[in-house]
Length: 409
Image (cartoon, rainbow, N blue to C red; front, top):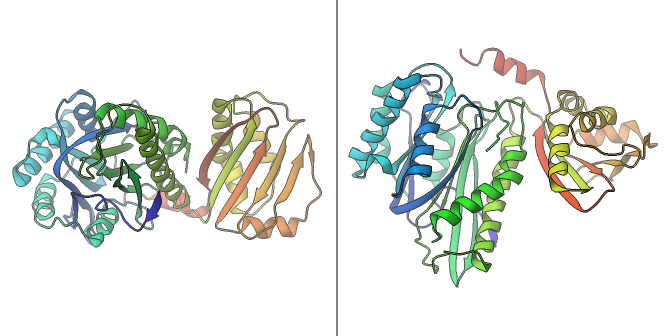
């Protein structure tokens, strides 16, 4: 298994395209399409927000209730098509109909993604025109994948892509994905959209099982600002073009595929956290030696969602009290008199900052220097058992407020 340079066109049989359709923005790519030459089985996880955008409802119906295959994904940025009522659903259907007519496929083979401002209705003249441009420029090249990842960004500062290769049953299997999300990121499955394409051959049921299990410890362990979007969507499409013997039951082949899916979702999740709106650093929290996995997850996510901890990270302030406080109100029970907290960063000597109820002697200057790094790792050793969990977030900066104070303008 190895990471490779790639995105949504890395797996056999997938093409991508992008265009500047003018959905909301006037001077940038704002629509993307991913298309499979062969029918795909699809799996998905979606926002837990009670308020669900129209494209979430559209995709969820096709993936959960549909018995057929899917072939394409059409994504727009700028307008979220959320809070748009029955008209929003009608516009999803119109989008799918335009794509089906242009691509020569069934409308229920078209998945839809939208991200941007909540409330406005989609500019369908721009959407329909964009689909025509997208269908006419599909390519399986690396550049096409990269531009598609650019086209789905909103406040992201850079596109997020990842690809991985492995061998299953003597055949090379590839997974390639893209994601967007910078603010309103607190998935429970940010606005978070992610699309992963694979040429593996496996059943729809096992694809959904693998995705549902890996997302718990990857995308669901990311938080930028604690806000769960109306549009969170994670889709995986598999077209079977790798030629491996079909994975129809759990076993070694399924485990290998699931591990690769975990690796790619973890990579994309880390990229989302590190590119949080206004962020200057990625903050990773490792909980180790907890009594059970669920407790470890709760504690890790409580630390990275704490506004005070995030502000301390921005100020390069080794204020371990904020970390301990966040753990204490998480709802998880533990003994603060039997706990160690450490700070780590690449190239720095580990700082042991808290031990069994008391602060440790450490240099404030050395701690400040460590906290200035691009990734800061907080590790809490619970000394209870063997369970572990990791969560990813970022610091809270003045720029986050600036971005969200005028997001609609």
